[in-house]
Image (tube, rainbow, N blue to C red):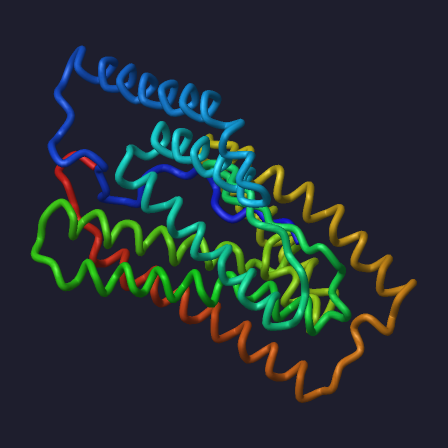
Length: 288
């Protein structure tokens, strides 16, 4: 199972990764050069120690990709937010691992893709649509729980840098898991909703296409969304083809289908509410 879990979006509204406002004038290019230097240092370290990390066996690609992804996320979001975002992505992926092992399905370790999230591969195909849906929803379930834990931690702290950082990370975490629930493969929601009906993928295509059109109308063309839309189109065609060739794959008891639907709608509601609540708690800085 492969997935793309987080688009390279700007900071959540009101969040500034630096503890102090950036100086005006020539200081901003210096800041960019500093971030670029940090990224190059991380990449150089990853290249230097990559061979050694690969020697640890199956964890090698995961560790190397984590180091490189941390460098890329630092460049996009700053070191503190980048590290927190990488941790939230790792928590999301751990949900797939846990649910897959609970189902008795062997999976590989995740490979991180910087601002594009991570991918994780099944070493054997799911038995049926029910099993695929269970493994897919594991990421949003555990990932949302992680975001909630971050939010609760932040709420225990007084107003300040760490409080703002944690609330902003929680906001992004809820968004990350909500976006993954869009009913279109290769997103998790497509794998869950396909257990209800393969036609759900057409709804997901419409949602993503609508986002692309709205952002293009605003003068921004997000390449991540375009890529997801193209992959979603190919995946949807494959879903309908599979339904004709292997109709038995989607067969399940009505009660099972009902519980999958309840779980899916419940996660949509929880992540949307979590995102709405944290949006109201985001720190607001003058000029942002």
